[in-house]
Length: 479
Image (cartoon, rainbow, N blue to C red; front, top):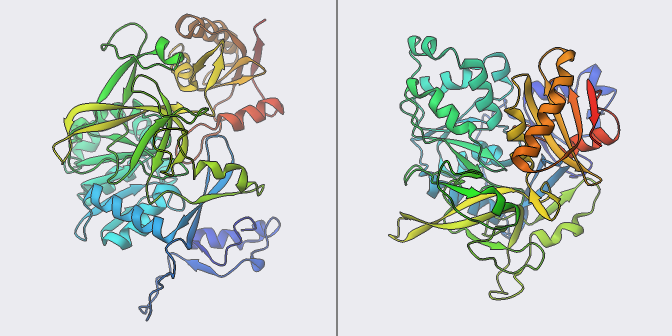
């Protein structure tokens, strides 16, 4: 509240009662807060006048969220950007009043807030919200709501998919006997700010006996633009390509056949929204990149955010993210820098204009990429190799510290197994990634911080490691 300097607070009745409790009064003084709007207390009378901004660039709302680096930051969304955003989603998803959309996302920030609050008003469709924390006690709640309401469009996060996969993986027969039917689901969109995971494909295969069509696909968005790609109701299935990991480490894109040695599968991040312009640029020289080289994804659209609002007040340091220009070629267009590496490929599939469309493939976050020995490595690739080494490893995260590669693994077993994990982790990273692990940290389950979207906060974990706050089971230094 102090950072945003808000004049109004909107929250649920349960959370507001918690903030006014005696336990919370020791930390926060709710009496000094601005007026509170209870989302569970609907107005009985229709307001006589609707607010119309005098300028489309007027600030509409601040969207605060915790990034993968563990930093709490907000973006400024104007009225014009908000209207353009809702218009693009309406066209892409073909939303109209008779449609119903089931959401299992955080409703107070990011794309979950836009789909739940803004698009419902703009398009007139009905949104069914299932809070993600409810799935921890009842994993079948979301799928049951989708089945009972006969929803055709559903949106969730990777954490929701993982809860359903782990909690209901052995109960598909019982769910089918109870009448749970997912055959009406036409699209199941995974909202994430990262490279599409294979978890969406595993989710589709696991629940195919319940009628779920294998069309679950990731949506790509970031802080400067919450939705660059979004799976629409019509159009072909997302495409996948296989790239050579050795070439990708040298910032080159070389397509290979499926099953080839050192191949890495990359899935398309959904269909680019109408009117969104994307270019791949060199993050250092700001020049456009060719098709055979990955670069930073820059986006040009009316629903881009207009600026940052940070806790430390250093918004000016990030102003270049929202108003960048290419160093040559088209130097007049203003682009927003996403901070993610990726590349565009012209597919053989055609768009509505009968022209071949561009597919966007996200490689990884630029600030989380690790440069070792002149090559660029992405933590998710290293973690994929590690998590397959032993059944007791439930989660892992990788980051660098003073030119050393640090790997943190969560152990689901006895402490005696911690010593066995060190040589396994060291060998698999050396054999598959040609890297030497400097430090192996074995911790208990739940130590690796994960945000509400199911994304690992590696930089936050790194800060905890440097401050000696992880309380590890075992630490090994490979010298």
